[in-house]
Image (tube, rainbow, N blue to C red; front, side, top):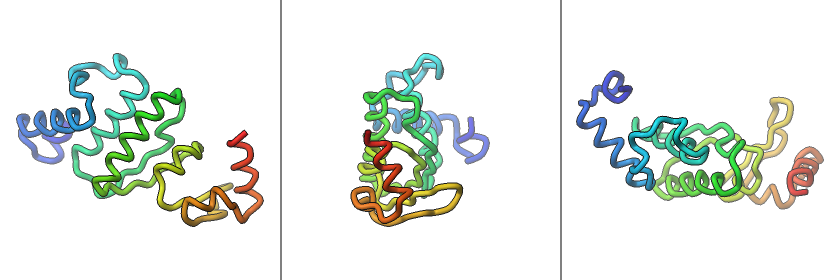
Length: 141
């Protein structure tokens, strides 16, 4: 409905966009399911795909793998990596360092609403601040 009402797509065009995106991310068989009928990983991937329907230049994801088991989190990561291959840009908030290492080009580490350290992904290997060192040690335990 959003594609039709907000983006002036015909119902046919909106449906074709949905089918194309669901096919691209191997979820077309779930096209007629309600959100409660999807697994957590499927629901998260569908929400990302819904956002793609409006052709954004940048996607903002807030904790896209939180509360997902490792297998479902991997599905979400694969979706993000697939989109990065197509030059989609992201701003992702996550506490999952494994996800961040694979999905990010650049890291901002924040504490109490302030940027404490930033740089390439390699800052996670050699943190310069005590805050990031403690966080990495805690998460990697």
